[in-house]
Amino acid sequence: EPGQDAEALRDLALRSLSAARARTALLTDAVDEPDLVAQHSPLMSPLVWDLAHIGNQEELWLLRAVAGRDAMRPDIDPLYDAFEHPRAERPSLPLLPPAEARRYAAEVRGRVFDLLEGARFGGGDFGAGLTEAGFAFGMVAQHEQQHDETMLITHQLRSGPPVLRAPDPAPADASGVSAEVLVPGGEFTMGTSTEPWALDNERPAHRRNVPSFWLDTTPVTCGRYAAFLADGGYEEPRWWHPEGWRFVREQNLRAPLFWRREGGTWLRRRFGHVEPVRDEEPVVHVSWYEADAFARWAGRRLPTEAEWEKAARHDPATGRARRFPWGDGAPGPRHANLGQRHLRPAPAGSYPEGESPYGVRQLIGDVWEWTASDFLPYPGFVTYPYKEYSEVFFGPEYKVLRGGSFGADEVAVRGTFRNWDYPVRRQIFAGFRTARDAAPGEGS
Ligand code: AVJ
Ligand code: FE
Image (cartoon, rainbow, N blue to C red; front, side, top):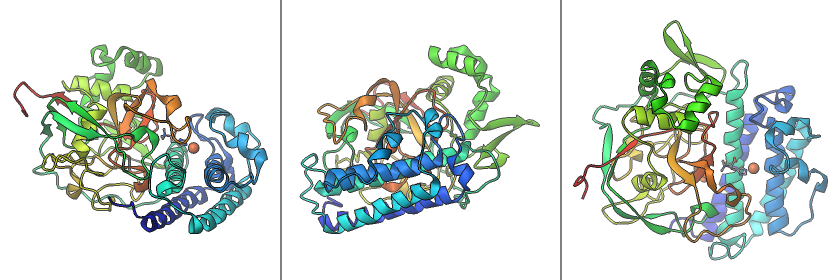
């Protein structure tokens, strides 16, 4: 089992925490002080809140829960408790100013590195203790990277000239990539009981059966999505879920968030740049309702979460579930568009080396993919280590997203990873792919 060795996990924790902090620094050093404390959208926190919240959660879980230390700043805990203050309230709180927030997070990190050096990682029994398999360190590194993606969303929502820079992904050779692939029906293993840093909602591994289905080889592109717009898709109630129809009418939606029509072409605002929409690029910034409507217009549907995971992890040759579509090895730059290396999804058909055994591409990275499924616990689910990570969100009001985006990091994305959000959410880096049932006899 990869990564089960205590020394390898300690090294991975050190590298993951350091990588997360480098990204946090980049995202918060890119703007000046007034910009750090400003709220760029009522949907988001000021960046300086994320910064101190990252430090505060790290202190809570590693210095207090693991090491048993006293609170460094008991006075600030309530300010950075995400459940105590909704995002819209956060700018009016007496938050630590930028210099203090940076100093606090750095002080916590220094103590955490000392702790990590001497920590005993144990044998890897999930739930036996916070340091088993280095779980708490992995959880904290994932938490920081999740907030780095949140901060990247804040950057996308902020107006003004560009402050972030990254090279574009390479053009793709999509010739010979079929539109869809057949995934034959049958049992597979969903979820995990062995992945050391998998969070509670990804557990335990269990058997599932799905009937044969067809799945898009790549995420839906802007070009295909623009055809839906050109066909009057946003004016035609029959494509929409009833609540989705109410949502587009109330909000007067006409296109994905950040799109604008000018002189007969679609333009898109992207991290301070305004540029023509690229047909070959996966569409991003659509709500679940828009994804669902597009799929119906196309004569298809969203895949269920189980279908997505089978297409991403099941290896029909061995019957085993892989950690990633390409195998068990960590994602590299040839497998997937992760880690904010690029500030946009890669063209559809990219990353042939990252494809799954069924030939599905770009399941990991590029855009989070909306699924048809509600966010529900797996059979045998046990909350760990706190119910506010996932348990309090289970239910029909959240839809599951899979696979991670260009803004997500490898430590926080894997074949089993589950994200969730409201079906109206559009500012996240979410797109989708579509599916359809196989005809009787196909795939069996
Ligand atoms: C898993 C992305 C839905 O950002 O709300 C961050 C992750 N949890 N801090 C979120 C999270 C607590 C969470 N998502
Ligand atoms: Fe958080």
